[in-house]
Image 1 (cartoon, rainbow, N blue to C red):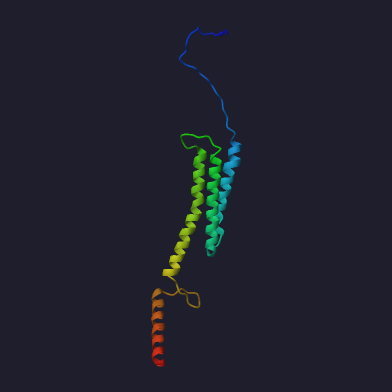
Image 2 (cartoon, helix red, strand yellow):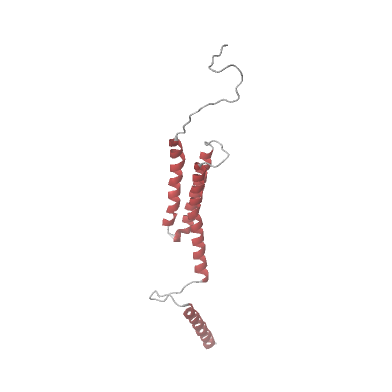
Length: 155
């Protein structure tokens, strides 16, 4: 074997190679970014489901969060392993967090509604004006006294 070179024969300590690589972004945009953005949009539509249908609202939100997770896991199999987070990893984490927010907000709203309904139930007059809590207590006392008076009359 004959090797010709402009350099004198011997050993060299350095080797320079230049590689030019290009990654096609269309694959990642079409298979990861767009589906996750679409599901994120759907997750935020949770707020258009009326609160009276809280069970349906929660089921819808949980389904979308799980779908975002599933999409992220399926797509992660096709990504190369790296030692640090890529922009795509950060985007996926952002989508998961933003997809969980409607679920968390719905749970907090439902719990707040439950507490308010149970402990601070506001009574309303016939004309729709909310009663002052003192008026409510006075009316309860009046009703109790009326019942006790009726019970004494019956005896």
